Length: 229
Image (cartoon, rainbow, N blue to C red; front, side, top):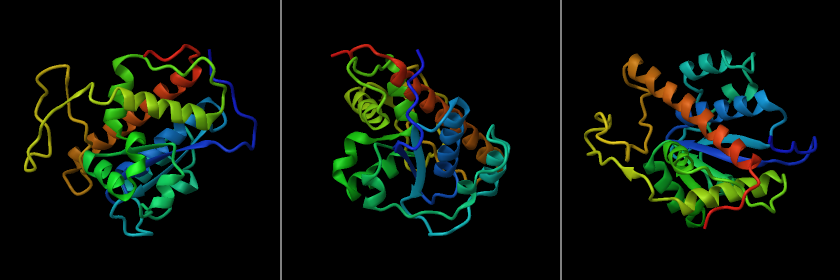
């Protein structure tokens, strides 16, 4: 069953995407999530992005702009080429779900506003947690987007720790082949200033994981079964 569409003009909940500088990874997360939303109808969940160490107004990565221009939305949305935004507590408090590129940014969020810990996940972490077992919205929940997003974050938080993190030394930022299905690198490393091949690979991961997150959230909103205890 597809989620009920909210009435036109009604405020929607917000997913905030965060990386270091808000010129590459988080900007593409925001765009891909929005593109996925618009391909299925009116936006139920807004998306925005920021950086923990952003230079306000700095232009986005050219590769991200090229990917945005080639998206299913057609012409590049105006938000895709706005300047970088510095993360602050006001932005965090407007978000029902916070998604970061790495655990380092996740830790920065917790330092800035400890109350956001239970709603903050790395992108790979959120996708992995939702994939462990299908999450479903409470039976009594209506189509209110804010409530759905809050319940989704709560479900992810309850499953936190269910994936084993692949330990990486500070000197080894690019993971080896994983040894088992339960091992997972929860970070999407910054490849903005690396070789073009590495940069393209990372952006491909960002695209795939952002679309997966949107699909899982949409599936969650469409379910009407009680959450497992």
